[in-house]
Amino acid sequence: MSDFLRRLTLLGLIPRRPQWEGAAAVARPSAGRAPTGKTSAAALLEQLQARGFATNLRAVQRDLVYLDKLFPELEHDGQRAGGRGWWWRADTQVQQLPALDPAMALSFVMARELLDPLLPPPLAQRLVPYYAAAERVLADAGAPGWTAWRERVRVIPEGQPLCPAPIEPAVMGVVQTALLEGWRFRGRYQPRERDLAEYVFNPLGLVFRARVVYLVATLWDYPDPRHFALHRFTQADLLDVAATPPPGFDFDAYLASGTFDYVTADGAPQRVELRMSEAAAAHLEETPLSADQCITAEPQSPGWLRVSATLRETEQLVWWLRGFADQVEILAPPALRARLIADARGLAERYGLS
Image 1 (cartoon, rainbow, N blue to C red):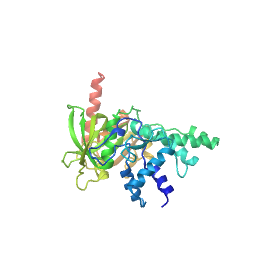
Image 2 (cartoon, helix red, strand yellow; image 1 turned 90 degrees about the vertical axis):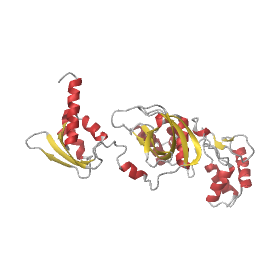
Image 3 (cartoon, rainbow, N blue to C red; image 1 turned 180 degrees about the vertical axis):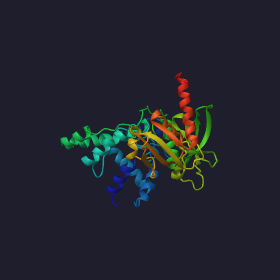
Image 4 (cartoon, one colour; image 1 turned 135 degrees about the vertical axis):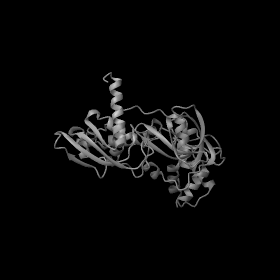
């Protein structure tokens, strides 16, 4: 393949230096690896060869020196040519090949409204250059229709809006690197009701729920997965030890088990029967609780409906039911009904009504 194509590919393999401190400085002890946020000639050689380029380390080093003269946004850490530490400046404009068209650019801009409320700031910040590129495409398009469409679409979060839990950027950088590259890390974690403790983590995945990001991981050599809120980490350091996931671990199966729903009973799905006001149950006609949901009228009680569905009894379900106050009555299962009755008695006592 031509020198031009190899150098063009090389430009796309060099990472952008993160704007937030932490991920850019993450380095594992292995001598042959560059820190996160940088790359090395040796790493670039591996990537080029994997893409079918017949080249060698010296050629890659020469390419880097050549490109460094053409692109002022391309930086290195001052070591010898082709050594560890090449990156694009954080504010480098995104260049797309092929270029973004206005429709795709609008998709990026609209995606920002969806993602910004969900992503922690360190992750959202990494997308800013791509949003900026999309903004430039729309500005250059000159068609008023694109701007009008953008001004007429909004995203409203469901439920009570909450501020995102703040995550240490350095912690996010370590967790991302450990997860993507398969390393263990040592972290200091503050459980909600216990003292600060230090653990060794085998990262398995990240879960975004509402405004909280959770790490699913095992500890040391134990096989049982657990989840940890990232904002409760005070420190994280990569280890030069490969992560050891449990044999046969399936991320989707772990989530499907209901671990994030905080199952309150034995975890088995059961038939839940509710008596709801028509106003409270109206949205269930369009967004049912389950595939086998059934809604029937109560002839003896005008304005009320009987709703039944097969569900797990979880804290999430309990929170949802509490939100309807006196517009819902739990008929079954008995344990769930008893819990909501206890809640009602507690509220009456709290407000001096008992």
